[in-house]
Amino acid sequence: MKLYEHPDSGNSHKVRLLMNFLSIPYDSVKVDLFEQEQNSAPFLEINPRGEVPVLDDEGIILRDSMAILVHLATNYDPKRLWLPEDAETYGAVMEWLAFSASWIQYGVFTARAAVAFGTMGNGLGWDFPVDPKEGQVRGRKSLEIMEKHLGQREWLTGDRCTIADIACFPYVALAPMGDVSLDPFNFVQAWINRFRDLPGFISMPGLDP
Image (cartoon, rainbow, N blue to C red; front, side, top):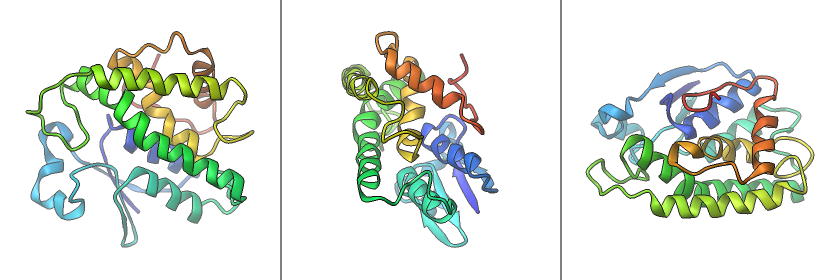
């Protein structure tokens, strides 16, 4: 199994987390985003989107972190703890994966990309005008939604962590890098700390206190 990734990519880190939780061995292939390797002809043959992560699982190529999480949780977790099979929980997990790919991606992800790396990300070139304000506004709104939700439960979809939590965790925890403070969101901070305490948790640049 081969994972094309970058250390600073939160989307890559989602996959690394689940692989570590499930003790899945893999070969890491670093794609240098800062040197524009993601836009090189060889990599665009692998992923025309010019994004990481990409998973090559014995010829099965997946080019999206959410799809990779579902693939791994379905095929490498016999107990189906990370993606429960009951219809209610499964649907709830899918809802939070969509939230991660929309509200979080265009919120705290965009704010972090703009403030910390000087790019808007999401397929926009490095020469595109950088303005973090929209991402910061949407990011705070998404944190308000999560704060209310987590005020009634420890995990996003029930009494244990699932790939829903993995999908949302990195960029929410990295929100301060985009000048989006977590201080007003006590339940979100408690959720972040619970996630950090999971056996097998691994960190990434920007996540260390």
